Length: 121
Image 1 (cartoon, rainbow, N blue to C red):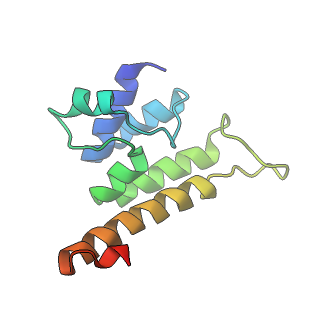
Image 2 (image 1 turned 180 degrees about the vertical axis):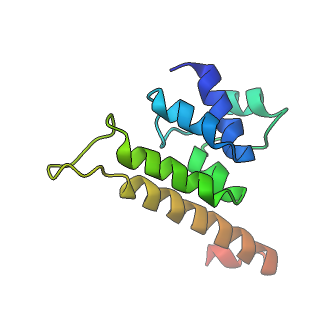
């Protein structure tokens, strides 16, 4: 996988640029790929991202819901995606995991700002 495509997809997710993200995915990129510390430093002058985030995390965090829908729609119709026995592509596990993680991070962040330590209960 071309690292330039991946870096463009990261900044694309940050700025809501559908074309950059879909180009990465259409070139065989994985929706579940996470950002490494080295990659964070490479895009830090353009986008503020964190190690371990996915493109979905970034897009959701910036409020680019249409981009998230485009990513998931692309994954649903991508012929290289893994299909089940019935022929339907399975992306709901990735989506559910990403959304659950995003919700937990967001809720923990909000709770900690209301009452320090309350999210640890």
